[in-house]
Image (cartoon, rainbow, N blue to C red; front, side):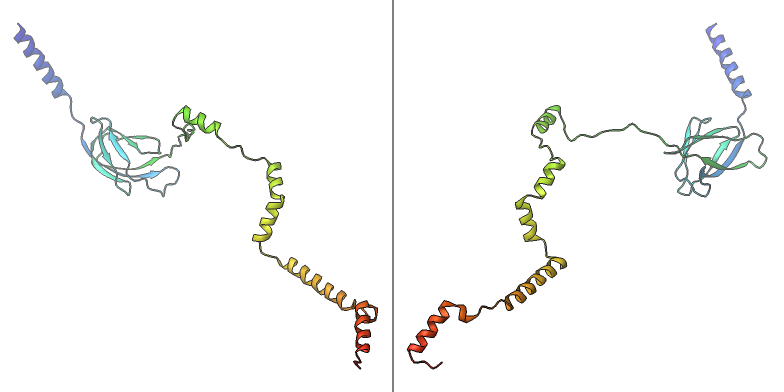
Length: 206
């Protein structure tokens, strides 16, 4: 009895398998383009035949692909940074060759913000926080810039500009002119009178 049931089951399976007819083969060919810019080719796109055990084919660097598939197969095109696109091969293709121009649209994925901290543990953070040196505010920076030591350091290190040199030359010429008109009269000098009397006493005619 068990053998009879097994034989009947096997015959039923074979008849069902025989009734199921395989779809005709088609040469599936095409090129993958960017949907936002048709002139831009998308290379190395994965083509998955969902109807045939998820067999995968990859396009070349020019986005070109060509392989054998079946009529009414569903093929999914996927690439990093692009939204997936599914293409279904139509039935009753007379030429047994189906050529398509696949357009896939770029997909922008917003990732959550990630903050990277230089501390491996909370103990290192506490240590650095306690020993941290607080930066000076604007008032403290201004006071340092106008301090005597800062000004002297800038005076010794910075070169003299043209205005400073011109001012120094003008001051030097002014002092020279003032000194040329302020020569003292030797007769008003007591030391000069002493030298004159001594010369007369010594009989110096000069």
